[in-house]
Length: 159
Image 1: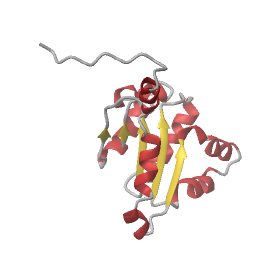
Image 2: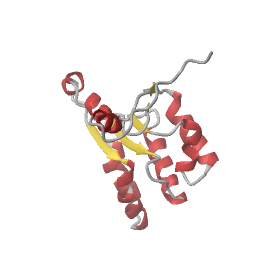
Image 3: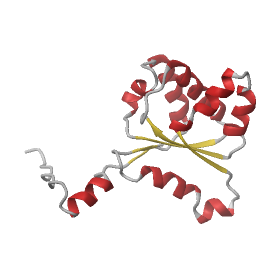
Image 4: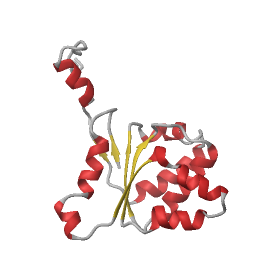
């Protein structure tokens, strides 16, 4: 699980881990999916083909990377589908998740469904290693260097 401020290269970090020499040597089968590309499962559910789609999109991979949790708010049906993905992967396959949100804010991304979000986080965090990286957005950092936006004042230590 990677939790970072906006634009701090989390989208690039997760696939980089999966494409490392060690991962390639072990024959790691990886799916890298931004959460915003979730309509595949929604369409399959409407067509009565969720089980097959879940297998193709979720179960066949040793590592599933889901990027941008919280980038878009999900409706109740979408949140339920995401819980099903997490439940299918729980103790069966590895996941790398990225988000700009703290865990306490995840219910906002999942249709304000606090019970659903708690069940999901319970499964996600049970065996997780959480990597929380603090840092400035690399996009803003580049703009500051170029003089396009004002520099931020350094943070002061409390007295």
